[in-house]
Image (tube, rainbow, N blue to C red):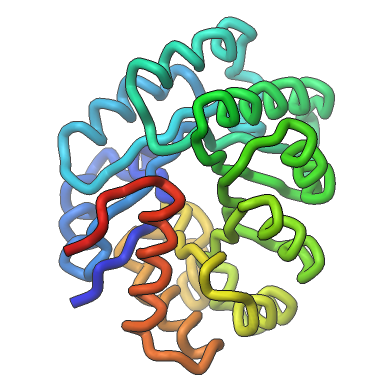
Length: 258
């Protein structure tokens, strides 16, 4: 049986309201024993905390996602350090920059992102980053603020950008996109990168796998992501499962699996 960690799952999303317990059970039956569940907006923090405390193997992260910029207020950013000090999450996030979606004010995004990186640094926590059409700027912000570790989830950058992130102590979150044959650059990076910088994720309910376009993504499907990565690397699935679980345990300071 696998012991996989989904390093990025939005199990608290409304898409799971009707069958969340079944989804969680299905994931565990498949070998996805633990999930990192990052917040996207301040008004979801309490429900996320309650979800993660109600079931074993769910670990919250708290942050303000750039795509939900309209929901953020300055007082949310001010309250974040107190929330983190009290709740002791495994990471700060999901935070970052999105220069792809129209209508998201770049300067406001930068303000929220920079402050969250500083909070992650001050609490010695990893940062969970969303960086779409913004990876170079995100890397510069990491360097400037001195945050020491984290993950760029759904990594879609170049090999050069990947190497820059590794030097900053950041890992790459790899999920559904790697299963698409047309994702040649990503697949080549995943095939050859040092395994110690690799994390597996689903980004459930988003980013469905190849052949499942238009369907809700589920944490149980992390097994298929793992199988794809193993095939690309010419490795056994058990080897990739074990390595990526160790990587997640190290990054998020989780207890080692038995």
